[in-house]
Image 1 (spheres, rainbow, N blue to C red):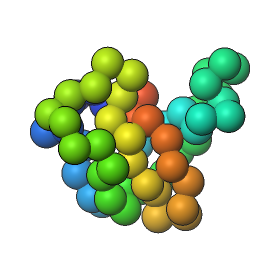
Image 2 (image 1 turned 30 degrees about the vertical axis):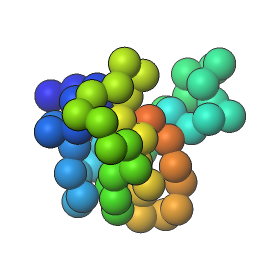
Image 3 (image 1 turned 45 degrees about the horizontal axis):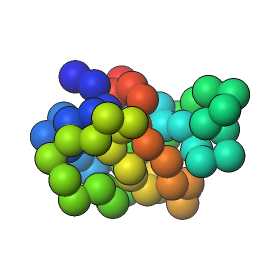
Length: 63
């Protein structure tokens, strides 16, 4: 499972995302998915999600 397919990501999953401000450095933030913000079935840079702590970013890894 990777973060590029919407079918692999759902609310309640533990994931690592890259925040907009961390895209250059590649720093990952870990958390639990609250809701999915990307509507398309896939995205080359990762599905955009909101974590339970309010952080918004693109999924890089599904844990």
